[in-house]
Length: 389
Image (tube, rainbow, N blue to C red):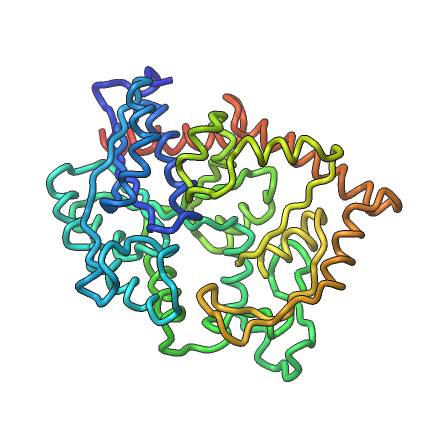
């Protein structure tokens, strides 16, 4: 595949993930995708994270990929964090989060020095590194954003932000429709993120606004999703919101090397073969995926659009760093949801499992040579090549 991009016009990309496992892992997969297409790829990381990443990147280089790591010191001590703090997973209390983001902002100057020295053709930077749009623009370099979330979530968030359909709602549990979307999406006021409900000077509100502004000024967005999964929202995102996006996922399917995958994440105290042995001892179709994130958007997508899952009854949105006043989901609700999903009875359950299988096959096809995600990645690279010429 490297021959697809001529050496005469070899592109160079900076991949800059925020130091959080849920963002780093898919972005490293994205780095490998570009490198496999003959794009010179430089991953920007911090010293301790680079040590972990180097285990997998060294294997890639040995296989012939033009992929490297460039480090930037993380100013933990300067902002009042313990020495050696470089990742979100190392934060032990919510009051450390503002300091962490302050340190992240201080990476702009050393990052600009790297841009000036290496002059990459484009930058793919994490959503939380909003300042990279401005930094790259100083050198005439386009910046693409990696959100980590699907397009559906971004469409719902934008509709809520602009239309504010919850403003007349008094009861936190009263449902309302999110307007203008391809599907009928129902939410309650308690499920709407605080930074969308009202503008405040809280950390999350400030960060969210910076992300939104940088998105508007960026070259576009890379999405770890595939067109067939959320085609209506991909079209809505482009036509109604006016933001360019390339769906190039699921990026995890691009890599079948289990050891390589294991090296990228946080080290598990449980041996991999023990986990697989335990799973293999269970009956087929007996595994349930539990989502804790998004972050109610994901819940609405899974239950109201794809219709391949069931809610356990969470009712209130909380910041992902919040550790107090957290609502507890009682075991009875969890038991009810699990029982419903595992039951062999009922037409609804049969249809749900049928849809899961169909989506699984579509995901695998999307990353094949003629698949939608592969085609979109090719289109992006060719566009960037033309821009360089």
